Image (cartoon, rainbow, N blue to C red; front, side, top):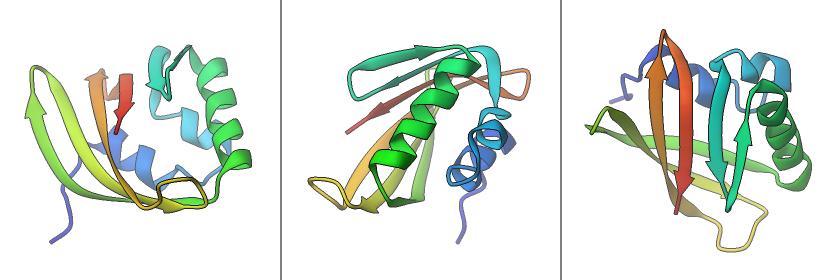
Length: 108
């Protein structure tokens, strides 16, 4: 059974391999992303983060679990690619506002 994800989160996972502009459309203007010990604030920084990740790694991400806790949507996804420790299950903590991603934290 496929996961039923909120639209901005579904867009995040389907647009992950798209160009940075398409990918950024699911984020709020002042969104914050935390990944690999770094914080990226605003669309320009989020686009750079995504471009750098696409340049550095070749990977696929397959969400397989979703829960809600403390106002966050938590998605667990199997990420497989050319990075140390692959494959790995990552947890994505999304906060949504006005049908956009306001914050995202990615944790092992």
